[in-house]
Image 1 (cartoon, rainbow, N blue to C red):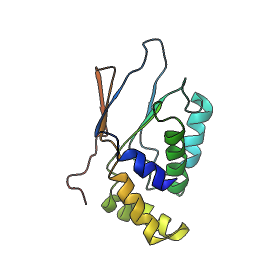
Image 2 (image 1 turned 45 degrees about the vertical axis):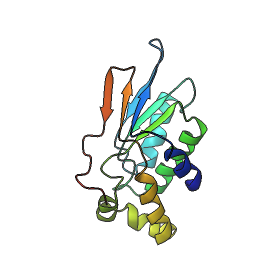
Image 3 (image 1 turned 30 degrees about the vertical axis):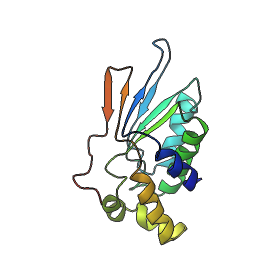
Image 4 (image 1 turned 90 degrees about the horizontal axis):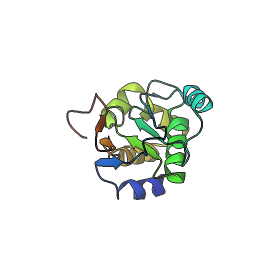
Length: 149
């Protein structure tokens, strides 16, 4: 899955244009921070991502919570399943410094390996930085990094 999502993200622009018909619903969520059960609650209340239920997750998927790996795998899975209806933007917690400081790096190393943690950093570097919805709404995460690396 991680190789597939990296290969997909490498083809995406930093600025992604989203076209939503005016009569359709579109959900924007931010700052899940590894709270897997909160993510499941969002899906229970609002429905799972699908072609008729699009989402934009606006950064900070990981860190702070104990289930960041489960959150990011879930979001990546839906992104691969519905690439034109599930959108993800990079937040400041999708960076190596924040991951080391706030726990994602340690969680991945504990559950998997250092190599996998390094690979997540590489994947995060490919996430789009912002989205424009219907040529009128600009969405970006408010805490973007000052330096990449």
